[in-house]
Amino acid sequence: MAQQSSNGNRPKLSEKGLLTPDNCVVALIDHQGQMLFGTSNFDRQGIINNTVAFGKAARVFDVPVVLTTVETKSFSGNMWPQLRAVFPGKEPIERSSMNSWDDKNFVAAIEKSGRKKILIAGLWTETCVALPTVQALHDGYEVYVVEDCCGDVSQLAHENAMKRVVQAGAKPVTSLSVLLEWQRDWAHKGTYDAVMDIVKNHYGAYGIGVEYVYTMVHGAPATKFPEYAVPAAVAVHK
Figure 1 (cartoon, rainbow, N blue to C red):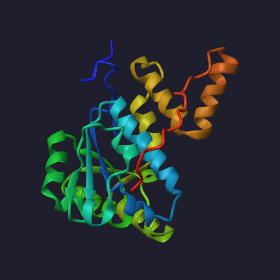
Figure 2 (figure 1 turned 180 degrees about the vertical axis):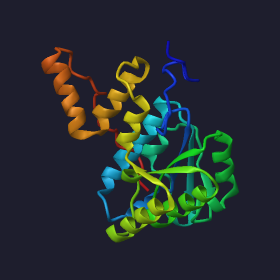
Figure 3 (figure 1 turned 30 degrees about the vertical axis):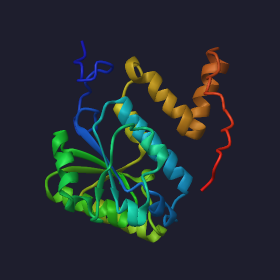
Figure 4 (figure 1 turned 45 degrees about the vertical axis):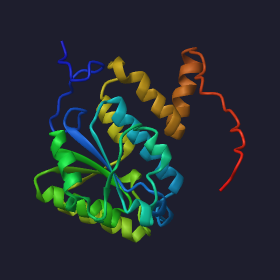
């Protein structure tokens, strides 16, 4: 009989060098308006989509998440509302430092998780991702950079940042690869439906392929998404 994790919906997975929901912590760094404005190496809507999907995956598998923002009021703006909606009631750690690892509250939140594997994603890759990654590695953590949830001011900047963190010992992954690594076995039914919901909402051709097979091959009813309601006009626009 499989050993159960702290989350009763899923069995405890073997590690042997792999990520599991029980051995890692997620850090989402500076997913804010001004930071996205300056991102040009990757489709910006794609970054939003992938980051929201990654956040949902962390919720499904009950993985600890640290949210952090920089200079919200004076420059960078709020964390995206799409991402805040995934973590209702969870306040980001506000910083002045570009490097999250220079912020004692951020480091304390990582330490509080008790996990030694950190999944980092953020804007911009060359600074807000690379700097804490290099220093966390120096302090004995194992770091995975979720590359499709990151972006930078140019392709060169992003590529140089990824080279730097990989040379330092970090491992590049994607939001989908992490989701599937956490699920690991389609027989784990406690999280199966939630994973499929993320796939159908966020992963394009993969999600449409799942819908096609369910309905056309297995005869399942079509997925019902929430009906669209046109927002009512507000009385005053500022």
